[in-house]
Image (cartoon, rainbow, N blue to C red; front, top):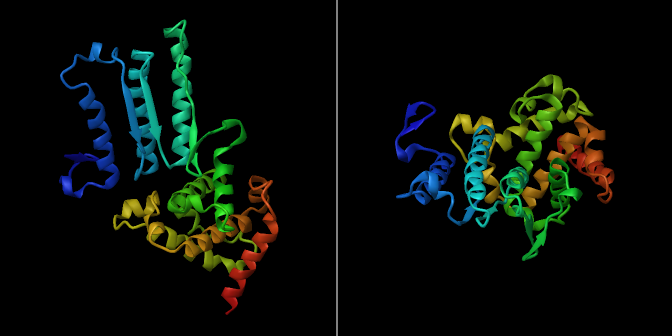
Length: 285
């Protein structure tokens, strides 16, 4: 077995690599003993559960492209084929939606009198509810989830809050500084911009804790910061404290940016100032 051009034993491959192999095997097994040119003409019902879990950013992009290709083959092969994609990753949810929208446009030319129908849902309070894209924006939605979780009002996200915080931090650092969050946490020119230099060491250490405690002993995975697995074993209170600190970090670096994305939430600046003061009091003790 090859990984990045090097021979690797099956027992040594990462969880993400196993998931990639499993997904490829899933699609290959469907076509077993069939001629490819005719196989896609049949009607299928495909269920794809969390297709990009445990992947870094580059592999996620590759897998979504692979899914786009495979789903296009099946859905444009037979208008009656049905595909369900399930994920707890909000960004994967949006990416999947974009794939379906592209396939809807492609189906208009191939199937003149029929078209593919796409319905996005979210599981909320044990019920499936229609998900409205018009009312959401990916990055803003992630930030609001973290803010509400920090206040104790979004406990349904407790199991996946680590990934949500990672995605939001990566988006912030990439958009604002064109760097990964691991680079931002060690860039002294950026840390000097914190409102109050007494915070510099504290937040540098915070980012290291988030990166180095991701449950992986592989250096490349640690640097990528793609899965905060340790969030599954720490207490809810500790998760909420970390959520507060992450929001304070962004607030101190770019106050206007954070307030703009949390517009409409209750008492945002009051809570942020309170949380920042608690950090400052911790530093003085």
